[in-house]
Length: 147
Ligand code: CU
Image (cartoon, rainbow, N blue to C red):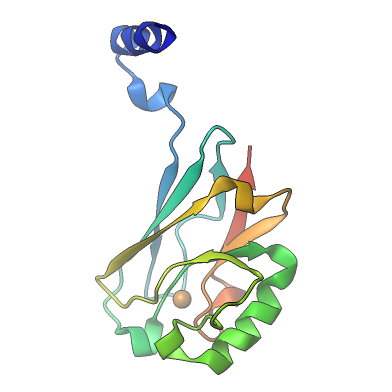
């Protein structure tokens, strides 16, 4: 019943995107080693959250690969260091790294990927998203916050 009323009011307002909490975000990484967003807000009403990553550049992933890793901000350096040792075949993330909340695979120019994780895993934070390709997290990082 409540659902029907909500749906009806959304139709009347004609703005469903503004009414519903978006449980996903589209972000881009480029050949200049940058993400196009600095902060991601996650609605606490979302059970799961999806990050869609698009590499808008042209360079291959051996030269300018990007992924998205979600973790506590304090763990970025440690995850990064172990990810470099793990290598490209492991998407620059150590297998079974318990500090990693979620991560996507590594992609090159023109490719896309996505990662979905339970919002509950974000806990209290502060958390960040970053690229664990060697050297990239200096520029390619931002905050991810449940609100
Ligand atoms: Cu990168």
